[in-house]
Image 1 (cartoon, rainbow, N blue to C red):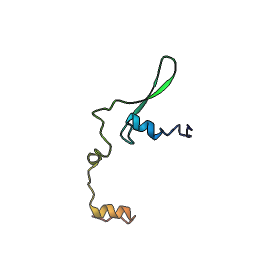
Image 2: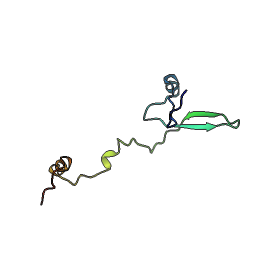
Image 3: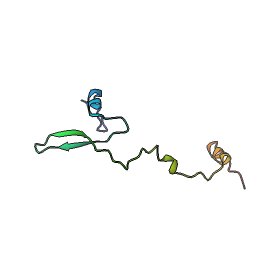
Image 4: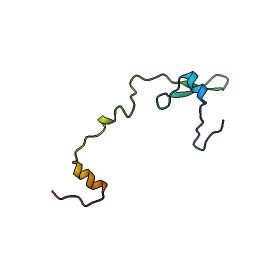
Amino acid sequence: MRVTSKGQVTIPRDVRESMGILPSETEVEFLQDENGRWYISKAKASKNTASRFRTAHKAGKLTMSTDEIMTLTRDEAWPSS
């Protein structure tokens, strides 16, 4: 298996499927035994960990009008009040 410059490797599909590793949903951890060998393990799921997309609606509150937002995206002069 080749390691990228970022230290990444691809876990083969049959290994992911047999371990139940799902993209963007599963955490893995690396464990070392007493002989110095390394193993990959599916991390225990945390009950408090929610997807960042499921909680994104709580992140910000809209205080600008649609016209003000469109003005910003069009790089126009800010309307005077």
